[in-house]
Length: 505
Image (cartoon, rainbow, N blue to C red; front, side):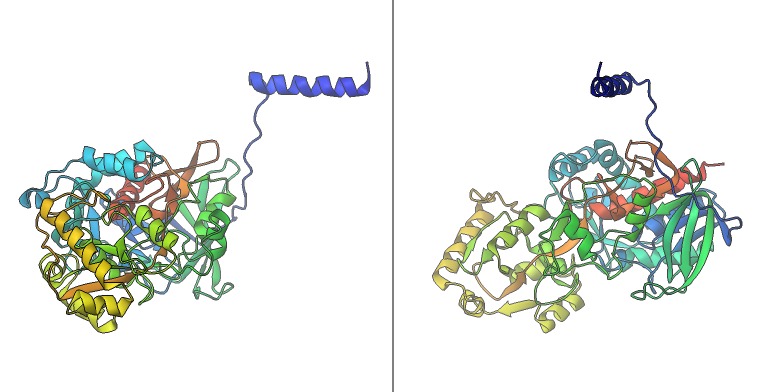
Protein backbone atom coordinates (compact mmCIF):
# COMPACT_ATOMS: atom_id res chain seq x y z
CA UNK A 1 0.00 0.00 0.00
CA UNK A 2 1.45 3.34 -1.02
CA UNK A 3 1.88 6.38 1.18
CA UNK A 4 -0.57 8.19 -1.08
CA UNK A 5 -3.23 5.52 -0.53
CA UNK A 6 -2.78 5.67 3.24
CA UNK A 7 -3.19 9.45 3.23
CA UNK A 8 -6.29 9.20 1.11
CA UNK A 9 -7.83 6.56 3.35
CA UNK A 10 -6.90 8.57 6.40
CA UNK A 11 -8.58 11.63 4.92
CA UNK A 12 -11.72 9.71 4.04
CA UNK A 13 -11.76 8.25 7.53
CA UNK A 14 -11.59 11.71 9.03
CA UNK A 15 -14.48 12.88 6.87
CA UNK A 16 -16.54 9.87 7.94
CA UNK A 17 -15.80 10.56 11.58
CA UNK A 18 -16.83 14.18 11.22
CA UNK A 19 -20.02 13.15 9.42
CA UNK A 20 -20.81 10.69 12.20
CA UNK A 21 -20.29 13.43 14.77
CA UNK A 22 -17.47 11.62 16.56
CA UNK A 23 -15.04 14.53 16.16
CA UNK A 24 -15.85 17.71 18.03
CA UNK A 25 -16.08 20.94 16.01
CA UNK A 26 -13.36 23.47 16.79
CA UNK A 27 -14.31 26.14 19.27
CA UNK A 28 -14.96 29.65 18.02
CA UNK A 29 -12.04 32.00 18.56
CA UNK A 30 -12.48 34.60 21.27
CA UNK A 31 -10.54 37.73 22.04
CA UNK A 32 -9.70 37.08 25.68
CA UNK A 33 -8.31 40.27 27.13
CA UNK A 34 -9.94 40.65 30.54
CA UNK A 35 -8.42 43.48 32.59
CA UNK A 36 -7.06 42.70 36.04
CA UNK A 37 -9.04 45.67 37.33
CA UNK A 38 -12.00 47.36 35.67
CA UNK A 39 -12.16 51.15 35.65
CA UNK A 40 -15.93 51.12 36.14
CA UNK A 41 -18.64 48.54 36.86
CA UNK A 42 -22.34 48.88 36.02
CA UNK A 43 -25.24 46.45 35.82
CA UNK A 44 -26.44 47.15 32.28
CA UNK A 45 -24.38 48.95 29.64
CA UNK A 46 -26.14 50.42 26.60
CA UNK A 47 -24.29 51.67 23.51
CA UNK A 48 -26.40 54.21 21.61
CA UNK A 49 -28.86 56.97 22.51
CA UNK A 50 -31.54 56.44 19.87
CA UNK A 51 -34.92 54.73 20.13
CA UNK A 52 -33.49 51.34 21.06
CA UNK A 53 -30.93 52.55 23.57
CA UNK A 54 -33.17 54.97 25.45
CA UNK A 55 -36.11 52.56 25.34
CA UNK A 56 -33.89 49.91 26.92
CA UNK A 57 -32.61 52.30 29.58
CA UNK A 58 -36.09 53.34 30.69
CA UNK A 59 -37.45 49.79 30.62
CA UNK A 60 -34.40 48.49 32.47
CA UNK A 61 -34.95 50.97 35.28
CA UNK A 62 -38.63 50.08 35.44
CA UNK A 63 -37.68 46.40 35.65
CA UNK A 64 -35.49 47.09 38.67
CA UNK A 65 -31.98 47.34 37.19
CA UNK A 66 -30.22 49.76 39.53
CA UNK A 67 -27.06 50.81 37.73
CA UNK A 68 -27.55 51.58 34.03
CA UNK A 69 -25.12 53.52 31.85
CA UNK A 70 -25.85 54.76 28.33
CA UNK A 71 -22.93 55.65 26.04
CA UNK A 72 -22.76 57.54 22.75
CA UNK A 73 -19.70 58.48 20.71
CA UNK A 74 -21.32 61.65 19.36
CA UNK A 75 -21.42 65.06 21.11
CA UNK A 76 -25.22 65.05 21.21
CA UNK A 77 -27.79 62.35 21.91
CA UNK A 78 -30.36 60.88 19.56
CA UNK A 79 -28.46 59.56 16.55
CA UNK A 80 -30.68 58.98 13.54
CA UNK A 81 -33.72 58.67 15.79
CA UNK A 82 -33.87 62.33 16.68
CA UNK A 83 -33.98 63.37 13.00
CA UNK A 84 -36.41 60.77 11.71
CA UNK A 85 -39.94 61.49 10.50
CA UNK A 86 -41.58 61.22 13.90
CA UNK A 87 -44.09 58.35 13.70
CA UNK A 88 -44.35 54.80 15.02
CA UNK A 89 -46.33 51.87 13.63
CA UNK A 90 -48.98 50.26 15.80
CA UNK A 91 -51.89 48.07 14.73
CA UNK A 92 -55.18 48.23 16.62
CA UNK A 93 -54.92 51.41 18.69
CA UNK A 94 -57.48 53.75 20.18
CA UNK A 95 -56.51 56.43 17.64
CA UNK A 96 -57.20 54.05 14.76
CA UNK A 97 -60.52 53.02 16.24
CA UNK A 98 -61.53 56.66 16.61
CA UNK A 99 -60.63 57.26 12.95
CA UNK A 100 -62.61 54.21 11.83
CA UNK A 101 -59.50 52.28 10.77
CA UNK A 102 -59.73 48.50 11.14
CA UNK A 103 -56.33 46.98 11.87
CA UNK A 104 -54.74 44.14 13.79
CA UNK A 105 -51.33 42.71 14.73
CA UNK A 106 -51.99 39.86 12.29
CA UNK A 107 -52.39 42.32 9.41
CA UNK A 108 -49.23 44.19 10.39
CA UNK A 109 -47.35 40.88 10.56
CA UNK A 110 -48.54 39.97 7.06
CA UNK A 111 -47.46 43.38 5.75
CA UNK A 112 -43.98 43.03 7.28
CA UNK A 113 -43.52 39.57 5.77
CA UNK A 114 -44.83 40.68 2.36
CA UNK A 115 -42.69 43.82 2.18
CA UNK A 116 -39.67 41.82 3.36
CA UNK A 117 -39.95 39.44 0.43
CA UNK A 118 -40.28 36.51 2.81
CA UNK A 119 -36.83 37.18 4.26
CA UNK A 120 -37.97 38.63 7.59
CA UNK A 121 -37.50 36.10 10.38
CA UNK A 122 -41.10 35.31 11.41
CA UNK A 123 -40.41 35.13 15.15
CA UNK A 124 -38.89 38.63 15.13
CA UNK A 125 -41.62 40.13 12.94
CA UNK A 126 -44.26 38.47 15.10
CA UNK A 127 -42.72 39.98 18.23
CA UNK A 128 -43.03 43.47 16.74
CA UNK A 129 -46.61 42.92 15.62
CA UNK A 130 -47.75 41.46 18.93
CA UNK A 131 -46.00 44.14 21.01
CA UNK A 132 -46.80 47.25 18.95
CA UNK A 133 -49.97 48.41 20.73
CA UNK A 134 -48.49 47.91 24.20
CA UNK A 135 -45.41 49.77 22.98
CA UNK A 136 -47.54 52.70 21.77
CA UNK A 137 -49.31 52.86 25.14
CA UNK A 138 -45.95 52.69 26.95
CA UNK A 139 -44.64 55.61 24.89
CA UNK A 140 -47.62 57.69 25.97
CA UNK A 141 -46.75 56.95 29.60
CA UNK A 142 -43.16 58.06 28.91
CA UNK A 143 -44.51 61.39 27.72
CA UNK A 144 -44.71 61.08 23.93
CA UNK A 145 -47.59 63.09 22.43
CA UNK A 146 -49.39 61.75 19.37
CA UNK A 147 -51.63 63.75 17.06
CA UNK A 148 -52.65 61.74 13.99
CA UNK A 149 -52.62 58.37 12.25
CA UNK A 150 -51.08 58.57 8.77
CA UNK A 151 -50.46 56.23 5.85
CA UNK A 152 -47.02 55.10 4.62
CA UNK A 153 -46.36 53.18 1.42
CA UNK A 154 -46.58 49.39 1.66
CA UNK A 155 -48.97 49.27 4.62
CA UNK A 156 -52.48 47.90 4.16
CA UNK A 157 -54.04 50.67 6.24
CA UNK A 158 -52.99 53.91 7.94
CA UNK A 159 -51.16 52.89 11.13
CA UNK A 160 -48.25 55.32 11.47
CA UNK A 161 -48.85 57.29 14.66
CA UNK A 162 -47.32 60.74 14.20
CA UNK A 163 -46.03 62.82 17.11
CA UNK A 164 -47.06 66.43 17.50
CA UNK A 165 -43.88 67.98 16.11
CA UNK A 166 -43.45 65.55 13.17
CA UNK A 167 -39.90 64.74 14.21
CA UNK A 168 -38.05 61.95 15.99
CA UNK A 169 -37.27 64.49 18.69
CA UNK A 170 -40.91 64.08 19.70
CA UNK A 171 -39.87 60.65 20.98
CA UNK A 172 -36.25 61.25 21.97
CA UNK A 173 -36.72 64.38 24.08
CA UNK A 174 -39.39 62.83 26.35
CA UNK A 175 -37.25 59.67 26.62
CA UNK A 176 -34.18 61.70 27.59
CA UNK A 177 -36.30 63.55 30.14
CA UNK A 178 -37.46 60.23 31.59
CA UNK A 179 -33.85 59.01 31.81
CA UNK A 180 -33.01 62.18 33.73
CA UNK A 181 -35.99 61.67 36.01
CA UNK A 182 -34.85 58.10 36.70
CA UNK A 183 -31.26 59.17 37.28
CA UNK A 184 -29.90 57.19 34.32
CA UNK A 185 -26.61 58.74 33.14
CA UNK A 186 -26.22 59.40 29.41
CA UNK A 187 -22.51 59.73 28.69
CA UNK A 188 -21.61 61.35 25.37
CA UNK A 189 -18.30 61.49 23.47
CA UNK A 190 -17.50 57.92 24.52
CA UNK A 191 -16.61 55.47 21.77
CA UNK A 192 -16.45 51.71 22.29
CA UNK A 193 -13.49 50.05 20.59
CA UNK A 194 -13.78 46.44 21.76
CA UNK A 195 -16.11 44.00 23.44
CA UNK A 196 -14.26 42.17 26.23
CA UNK A 197 -15.01 38.48 26.60
CA UNK A 198 -13.83 35.66 28.86
CA UNK A 199 -12.41 32.32 27.76
CA UNK A 200 -15.92 30.95 27.26
CA UNK A 201 -16.93 33.79 24.95
CA UNK A 202 -19.22 35.55 27.45
CA UNK A 203 -19.25 39.31 27.04
CA UNK A 204 -18.07 40.90 30.29
CA UNK A 205 -17.84 44.54 29.26
CA UNK A 206 -16.10 46.94 26.88
CA UNK A 207 -12.92 48.82 26.19
CA UNK A 208 -13.84 52.42 25.37
CA UNK A 209 -12.44 55.93 25.10
CA UNK A 210 -13.91 58.89 26.95
CA UNK A 211 -13.52 62.44 25.66
CA UNK A 212 -13.68 61.16 22.08
CA UNK A 213 -14.02 63.70 19.28
CA UNK A 214 -15.86 62.39 16.23
CA UNK A 215 -13.62 62.44 13.18
CA UNK A 216 -10.45 62.31 15.28
CA UNK A 217 -9.92 58.55 15.33
CA UNK A 218 -7.26 58.37 18.06
CA UNK A 219 -8.84 60.87 20.44
CA UNK A 220 -10.02 60.08 23.96
CA UNK A 221 -8.79 58.36 27.09
CA UNK A 222 -8.94 54.55 27.29
CA UNK A 223 -11.24 53.07 29.94
CA UNK A 224 -12.74 49.66 30.69
CA UNK A 225 -16.34 49.18 31.78
CA UNK A 226 -17.72 45.97 33.32
CA UNK A 227 -21.40 45.15 32.74
CA UNK A 228 -22.68 42.45 35.09
CA UNK A 229 -26.08 41.97 33.44
CA UNK A 230 -24.99 42.48 29.86
CA UNK A 231 -24.11 44.89 27.07
CA UNK A 232 -26.72 46.14 24.60
CA UNK A 233 -25.55 47.32 21.19
CA UNK A 234 -28.04 49.92 19.98
CA UNK A 235 -25.65 51.90 17.81
CA UNK A 236 -27.51 51.97 14.50
CA UNK A 237 -26.43 51.04 11.00
CA UNK A 238 -23.53 51.76 8.65
CA UNK A 239 -25.09 53.94 5.95
CA UNK A 240 -22.34 56.56 6.26
CA UNK A 241 -19.53 54.00 5.93
CA UNK A 242 -19.02 53.91 2.16
CA UNK A 243 -16.33 51.21 2.29
CA UNK A 244 -18.49 48.97 4.45
CA UNK A 245 -21.64 49.36 2.34
CA UNK A 246 -19.71 48.91 -0.94
CA UNK A 247 -18.40 45.60 0.43
CA UNK A 248 -21.99 44.35 0.47
CA UNK A 249 -23.47 46.35 -2.43
CA UNK A 250 -20.81 47.75 -4.82
CA UNK A 251 -23.39 50.03 -6.45
CA UNK A 252 -23.64 52.19 -3.34
CA UNK A 253 -20.47 54.19 -3.86
CA UNK A 254 -19.72 57.72 -2.71
CA UNK A 255 -22.02 59.14 -5.41
CA UNK A 256 -24.93 58.19 -3.17
CA UNK A 257 -25.30 60.40 -0.11
CA UNK A 258 -27.20 59.33 3.00
CA UNK A 259 -30.10 60.53 5.11
CA UNK A 260 -28.25 59.37 8.22
CA UNK A 261 -26.38 61.38 10.81
CA UNK A 262 -22.57 61.37 10.34
CA UNK A 263 -21.96 58.82 13.09
CA UNK A 264 -23.76 55.93 11.34
CA UNK A 265 -20.48 54.18 10.59
CA UNK A 266 -21.02 50.62 11.84
CA UNK A 267 -18.01 50.04 14.08
CA UNK A 268 -20.07 48.25 16.73
CA UNK A 269 -21.24 45.72 14.15
CA UNK A 270 -17.57 45.11 13.36
CA UNK A 271 -16.67 44.86 17.06
CA UNK A 272 -19.32 42.17 17.51
CA UNK A 273 -18.10 40.34 14.42
CA UNK A 274 -14.62 40.27 15.93
CA UNK A 275 -15.89 38.10 18.81
CA UNK A 276 -17.84 35.74 16.54
CA UNK A 277 -21.24 37.41 16.12
CA UNK A 278 -23.10 36.42 12.99
CA UNK A 279 -24.41 38.98 10.52
CA UNK A 280 -27.27 38.47 8.08
CA UNK A 281 -28.90 40.35 5.17
CA UNK A 282 -25.99 42.79 5.01
CA UNK A 283 -26.40 43.42 1.28
CA UNK A 284 -29.99 44.61 1.69
CA UNK A 285 -29.39 48.33 2.07
CA UNK A 286 -32.50 50.45 1.72
CA UNK A 287 -32.66 53.69 -0.25
CA UNK A 288 -35.19 56.33 0.71
CA UNK A 289 -37.35 57.12 -2.35
CA UNK A 290 -38.74 60.31 -0.85
CA UNK A 291 -35.59 62.42 -0.52
CA UNK A 292 -34.95 65.42 -2.73
CA UNK A 293 -31.78 66.50 -4.56
CA UNK A 294 -32.73 70.05 -3.62
CA UNK A 295 -31.70 69.57 0.02
CA UNK A 296 -29.20 67.51 1.99
CA UNK A 297 -29.58 64.75 4.58
CA UNK A 298 -33.01 63.49 5.60
CA UNK A 299 -34.51 66.91 4.98
CA UNK A 300 -38.11 68.03 4.79
CA UNK A 301 -39.18 66.31 1.56
CA UNK A 302 -40.09 62.95 3.21
CA UNK A 303 -42.66 64.65 5.44
CA UNK A 304 -44.48 65.86 2.34
CA UNK A 305 -43.87 62.95 -0.01
CA UNK A 306 -45.00 60.10 2.26
CA UNK A 307 -48.35 61.81 2.71
CA UNK A 308 -48.66 62.86 -0.94
CA UNK A 309 -48.55 59.29 -2.29
CA UNK A 310 -52.02 58.36 -3.46
CA UNK A 311 -53.04 62.02 -3.69
CA UNK A 312 -51.02 62.84 -6.78
CA UNK A 313 -48.92 61.15 -9.48
CA UNK A 314 -45.18 60.55 -9.58
CA UNK A 315 -43.85 61.26 -13.07
CA UNK A 316 -40.65 60.95 -15.07
CA UNK A 317 -39.92 64.46 -16.39
CA UNK A 318 -38.39 62.98 -19.54
CA UNK A 319 -41.68 61.32 -20.52
CA UNK A 320 -44.32 63.14 -18.47
CA UNK A 321 -45.76 59.75 -17.52
CA UNK A 322 -46.17 57.73 -14.36
CA UNK A 323 -43.73 54.85 -13.98
CA UNK A 324 -44.38 53.09 -10.67
CA UNK A 325 -46.97 52.46 -7.95
CA UNK A 326 -46.85 55.61 -5.83
CA UNK A 327 -47.99 53.78 -2.70
CA UNK A 328 -45.60 50.88 -3.22
CA UNK A 329 -42.95 50.05 -0.66
CA UNK A 330 -39.67 51.92 -0.44
CA UNK A 331 -37.58 49.47 -2.41
CA UNK A 332 -40.05 49.34 -5.30
CA UNK A 333 -40.10 53.12 -5.62
CA UNK A 334 -36.39 53.74 -5.01
CA UNK A 335 -35.31 51.05 -7.48
CA UNK A 336 -37.63 52.51 -10.12
CA UNK A 337 -36.19 56.02 -9.72
CA UNK A 338 -32.59 54.76 -9.80
CA UNK A 339 -33.39 52.76 -12.95
CA UNK A 340 -34.63 55.94 -14.64
CA UNK A 341 -31.30 57.54 -13.80
CA UNK A 342 -32.41 61.08 -13.00
CA UNK A 343 -34.67 62.87 -10.49
CA UNK A 344 -38.41 62.38 -10.80
CA UNK A 345 -41.30 64.58 -9.67
CA UNK A 346 -44.30 64.00 -7.42
CA UNK A 347 -47.06 66.59 -7.16
CA UNK A 348 -50.56 67.13 -5.86
CA UNK A 349 -53.02 70.02 -5.70
CA UNK A 350 -52.67 72.63 -3.00
CA UNK A 351 -56.11 71.56 -1.79
CA UNK A 352 -54.87 68.03 -1.15
CA UNK A 353 -51.71 69.39 0.44
CA UNK A 354 -53.54 71.65 2.86
CA UNK A 355 -56.36 69.23 3.64
CA UNK A 356 -54.46 65.95 3.88
CA UNK A 357 -50.76 66.67 4.44
CA UNK A 358 -50.08 69.95 6.20
CA UNK A 359 -51.05 69.65 9.85
CA UNK A 360 -51.00 65.85 9.78
CA UNK A 361 -47.59 64.67 8.66
CA UNK A 362 -46.01 68.09 8.25
CA UNK A 363 -46.45 71.16 10.42
CA UNK A 364 -47.44 74.44 8.74
CA UNK A 365 -44.09 75.90 9.81
CA UNK A 366 -42.10 73.11 8.15
CA UNK A 367 -44.28 73.34 5.05
CA UNK A 368 -43.56 77.06 4.70
CA UNK A 369 -39.85 76.44 5.28
CA UNK A 370 -39.80 73.79 2.55
CA UNK A 371 -41.45 76.21 0.11
CA UNK A 372 -39.02 78.97 1.04
CA UNK A 373 -36.01 76.67 0.64
CA UNK A 374 -37.20 75.44 -2.75
CA UNK A 375 -37.55 71.82 -1.65
CA UNK A 376 -41.25 72.16 -2.42
CA UNK A 377 -42.36 74.35 -5.28
CA UNK A 378 -45.75 75.93 -5.88
CA UNK A 379 -47.10 76.31 -9.41
CA UNK A 380 -50.25 78.12 -10.48
CA UNK A 381 -50.94 75.66 -13.30
CA UNK A 382 -49.79 72.42 -14.90
CA UNK A 383 -48.29 74.49 -17.73
CA UNK A 384 -46.13 76.42 -15.30
CA UNK A 385 -44.98 73.18 -13.65
CA UNK A 386 -44.28 71.53 -17.01
CA UNK A 387 -42.15 74.47 -18.12
CA UNK A 388 -40.21 74.51 -14.85
CA UNK A 389 -39.28 70.81 -15.00
CA UNK A 390 -38.96 70.45 -18.77
CA UNK A 391 -41.97 68.13 -19.03
CA UNK A 392 -43.95 67.86 -22.26
CA UNK A 393 -47.14 69.73 -21.35
CA UNK A 394 -49.67 67.73 -23.42
CA UNK A 395 -48.42 64.46 -21.93
CA UNK A 396 -48.58 65.84 -18.39
CA UNK A 397 -52.17 66.92 -18.96
CA UNK A 398 -53.09 63.38 -20.02
CA UNK A 399 -51.25 61.86 -17.05
CA UNK A 400 -53.09 64.21 -14.71
CA UNK A 401 -56.46 63.29 -16.23
CA UNK A 402 -55.73 59.58 -15.90
CA UNK A 403 -54.75 59.94 -12.25
CA UNK A 404 -57.87 62.00 -11.52
CA UNK A 405 -59.92 59.20 -13.08
CA UNK A 406 -58.23 56.77 -10.69
CA UNK A 407 -59.18 58.98 -7.74
CA UNK A 408 -62.74 59.30 -9.03
CA UNK A 409 -63.20 55.57 -9.64
CA UNK A 410 -61.08 54.51 -6.61
CA UNK A 411 -58.95 52.10 -8.62
CA UNK A 412 -55.74 52.24 -10.63
CA UNK A 413 -55.61 49.65 -13.43
CA UNK A 414 -52.14 50.71 -14.59
CA UNK A 415 -50.10 50.57 -11.34
CA UNK A 416 -52.53 49.50 -8.59
CA UNK A 417 -51.80 52.61 -6.52
CA UNK A 418 -53.84 52.73 -3.32
CA UNK A 419 -56.55 55.37 -3.78
CA UNK A 420 -57.89 57.21 -0.77
CA UNK A 421 -61.55 58.13 -0.45
CA UNK A 422 -60.73 61.60 0.85
CA UNK A 423 -58.44 62.47 -2.08
CA UNK A 424 -59.42 65.50 -4.12
CA UNK A 425 -58.99 65.37 -7.89
CA UNK A 426 -56.06 67.43 -9.17
CA UNK A 427 -57.99 69.15 -11.96
CA UNK A 428 -57.13 72.68 -10.87
CA UNK A 429 -54.08 74.45 -9.46
CA UNK A 430 -52.22 75.65 -7.60
CA UNK A 431 -50.01 72.54 -7.45
CA UNK A 432 -47.30 71.61 -4.94
CA UNK A 433 -44.39 69.59 -6.37
CA UNK A 434 -41.16 68.00 -5.17
CA UNK A 435 -38.20 66.52 -7.06
CA UNK A 436 -37.06 63.07 -5.89
CA UNK A 437 -33.73 61.24 -5.87
CA UNK A 438 -32.98 58.37 -3.44
CA UNK A 439 -30.40 58.42 -0.66
CA UNK A 440 -28.95 55.56 1.37
CA UNK A 441 -31.32 55.37 4.31
CA UNK A 442 -31.44 52.11 6.26
CA UNK A 443 -29.28 49.00 6.60
CA UNK A 444 -31.66 46.06 6.62
CA UNK A 445 -28.89 43.66 7.63
CA UNK A 446 -26.87 43.45 10.80
CA UNK A 447 -26.28 41.26 13.84
CA UNK A 448 -28.35 38.10 14.13
CA UNK A 449 -30.59 38.08 17.22
CA UNK A 450 -33.31 35.90 18.71
CA UNK A 451 -36.63 37.18 20.02
CA UNK A 452 -34.99 38.00 23.37
CA UNK A 453 -32.67 40.40 21.49
CA UNK A 454 -29.69 38.16 22.32
CA UNK A 455 -26.92 38.16 19.72
CA UNK A 456 -26.08 34.83 18.12
CA UNK A 457 -22.83 33.52 16.66
CA UNK A 458 -22.24 31.88 13.27
CA UNK A 459 -23.62 28.58 14.60
CA UNK A 460 -26.82 30.16 15.86
CA UNK A 461 -25.65 29.92 19.47
CA UNK A 462 -26.30 32.73 21.97
CA UNK A 463 -23.35 34.95 22.85
CA UNK A 464 -23.93 35.29 26.57
CA UNK A 465 -23.99 38.84 27.87
CA UNK A 466 -24.54 40.47 24.48
CA UNK A 467 -27.76 42.01 23.21
CA UNK A 468 -28.58 44.08 20.12
CA UNK A 469 -31.60 46.12 19.04
CA UNK A 470 -32.54 48.46 16.24
CA UNK A 471 -30.82 49.06 12.93
CA UNK A 472 -27.66 47.28 14.10
CA UNK A 473 -29.60 44.00 13.78
CA UNK A 474 -30.60 41.97 10.74
CA UNK A 475 -33.44 39.63 9.88
CA UNK A 476 -36.14 41.73 11.53
CA UNK A 477 -37.59 43.26 8.37
CA UNK A 478 -36.20 41.21 5.49
CA UNK A 479 -35.33 43.00 2.28
CA UNK A 480 -37.59 46.04 2.80
CA UNK A 481 -38.54 47.94 5.92
CA UNK A 482 -41.99 49.48 6.00
CA UNK A 483 -42.04 53.09 7.10
CA UNK A 484 -42.35 53.63 10.89
CA UNK A 485 -42.10 49.88 11.64
CA UNK A 486 -38.41 50.40 12.41
CA UNK A 487 -39.29 52.83 15.20
CA UNK A 488 -41.44 50.12 16.75
CA UNK A 489 -38.68 47.56 16.12
CA UNK A 490 -36.03 49.66 17.86
CA UNK A 491 -38.04 50.44 20.97
CA UNK A 492 -39.64 47.01 21.31
CA UNK A 493 -36.39 45.06 21.01
CA UNK A 494 -34.50 47.55 23.18
CA UNK A 495 -37.10 47.07 25.89
CA UNK A 496 -37.05 43.30 25.33
CA UNK A 497 -33.27 43.24 25.88
CA UNK A 498 -33.69 45.18 29.12
CA UNK A 499 -36.37 42.83 30.42
CA UNK A 500 -34.19 39.81 29.69
CA UNK A 501 -31.10 41.40 31.24
CA UNK A 502 -33.09 42.26 34.37
CA UNK A 503 -33.64 38.54 35.01
CA UNK A 504 -29.91 37.83 35.10
CA UNK A 505 -28.61 37.22 38.61
